[in-house]
Length: 415
Ligand SMILES: *Cc1c(COP(=O)(O)O)cnc(C)c1O
Image 1 (cartoon, rainbow, N blue to C red):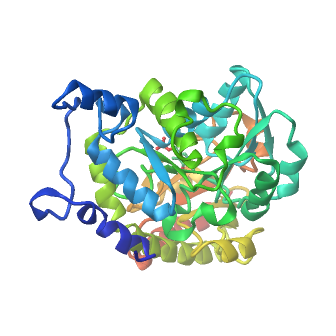
Image 2 (image 1 turned 180 degrees about the vertical axis):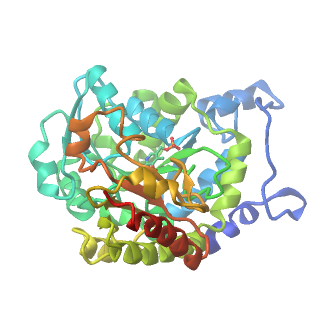
């Protein structure tokens, strides 16, 4: 089997066998699946025969996408969900109980940070730490700790977790290490390499890329030993132990909570994923150029991008990732209103989406990080003037021109 992700997934449907010699799996929209005999139906229900029973637990189209993500992550299996948030919440609901302790990075996607508050209200304890240093994770461990949750490149400030160090700590202490790799995608990084147990993707972002579908996934890398996890229910201790965790996530998470990925969206995400490798190359190259350009602008006080030598974790990014990602953020100098910069952009969309083929930007403190309040923004290192840019695949010159024009108009307006 080739190791390149593009080669792998381009041929994944065909190699699994598709009727008529079609090179793509068809779109299966049925809710129910029928069997010739009651015995066969029973076997599928009891898990001794593979097959589908009811659309809430998945369908052949989402299954084909799960196979592709499993191939890209070099994992043992994947469960797909309606959104990235559904994947995160459902997996944690399936694995945690009241009284359990979770350690999470302080630098988190806003809705994930909000979910950590909900977990606390439901009786779990959550400690938020500066995950750029594994020592902070290690110091927070208690006998009740079950899960450590981090993002690879944090959105929007691009802090990079000490992935290797945390992987070692989790291995030593027998903790489930969940890595949200949405910002890196399998094109740049494979969390299994640093000992991640579960990998999260928001499929709505770069993996889909075309901004026309929502989805999320959880993959099990096969690294974690589920025989040592205290909350696997007896019904899911079937077959190889490395499949137990994901089986419980599929049943207690996907089946019971029901945030199922629709076949139509799975189909569109799979089509987008075919060009992930190509799109990421272009987007990363654009992001590198834009970061270097912005760093030279007098109205810009700071640029946060892992590809810049000035980034605190530049060396870590270089060592771990194939490229530096398509997300950057920057702050404007005192007296320059970030709204004016954004309103001067003609091509770049003022939108909260990420990983779209089209470049978008937004004022972070007053939009996605507004609800949490000033104090938490400060602890997450979100400056009031921070502008986040999700860099797309437009021509580099067109992007630089758009930002150049927006900043040039402001040169004279500075108060
Ligand atoms: C967008 C995002 C999510 C949530 O994904 P949705 O598909 O929008 O629910 C989770 N983590 C990160 C890092 C994200 O960027």
